[in-house]
Length: 486
Figure 1: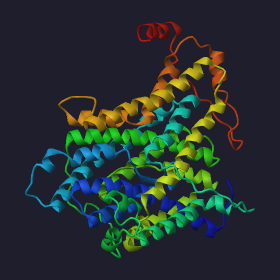
Figure 2 (figure 1 turned 180 degrees about the horizontal axis):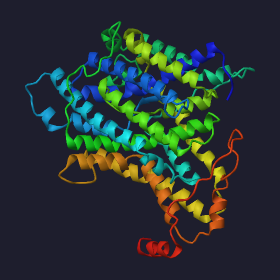
Figure 3 (figure 1 turned 30 degrees about the vertical axis):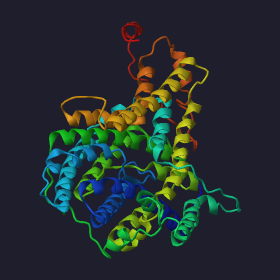
Figure 4 (figure 1 turned 180 degrees about the vertical axis):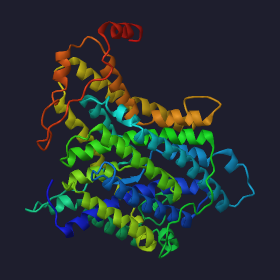
């Protein structure tokens, strides 16, 4: 990772801020209209999410994992949030105004997020997450980090701005996002001004036009986010359990992103205690999101981890500057609305690059594995297949029938199972950990070869402490278990 000048640090921080806005706008565009909110409510939710993301990024970089990771809005919480929005107690009263329904739904989302934050804080503070992370072998890290990048593959777009100019200073590498976005945004403005989108469908216009006056026009000049501005939160047990399941998925995705950030940032391997501390502050971030009225919980931003790899600058100063931009533009909302009005296809095109970078960080852990072992190859292939196949089944079933494959009388149970198994991380990482810890017929010497990085050197020459295998039970009971459950 190269050093940067203060002026470059501000430009790089603005890149991270600009990339974070894309996911926040996407989540708000999906959720707020279903809640009954209009353009003004959408603008307020975006500012609240920006403010909370800025605080979460600062806290995580100062007190959490202390890695150059940006904490943004999570796409994982959309399923339980949509379930709350479509609950009967919010939709059966046809006499209420849309804004009244928006307030009631927002209070329900806030209550569920508060319960989810308590779960995450408990997982980190009491060491539960530390004990879980100790089960990660290098082969499990391959699946975890790789699927952290592939988890949002449906948000990508096959477009890439090629870099033809290669100066001596890595200018185009570090600021490729700003340059490519400016060029495509100007092109979108030319198409909009020439009337190309005038007679196109409304969905095409809302995504591709460069003049979304609704967001810029209704955003206030100065806006101070206030905790619980829509009233006291309301609590429902089923909704809280579904939101807690989503927080568990977000916690796992954040762990994979932290490992990718440490890999690209030339940091030493992250010990389980640091990841557990990061989980605690991620839970505190979920509490902040619920207080300020965000419609989703936080997670370590995958796209920003990819931007760190593209810019080759792993600096906490840059990330903290980006947090300052988030807080500044959330207060001065009119200026922030200008950058939030970027056409979504531009952000989707950048996701193709940044998600790919994070996935490649997962593949880099294969150098610590013995690829001559048939057991290793089988676990790797099976976990990759299950990580794609299982979520695809749940996703196709959800699209066809608009319901979960699990048919019970409890909607919260259906949503909890769906949100877990629609995550590619749980499909792949769980399969990898299960076969790694239970498959028999492997000698101790072969295990040591598979984990050749034990006691070796890290990417910057630091000593890596050994990672011991879990479930070190005797050979005979393990063989008996495999015979019963092959």
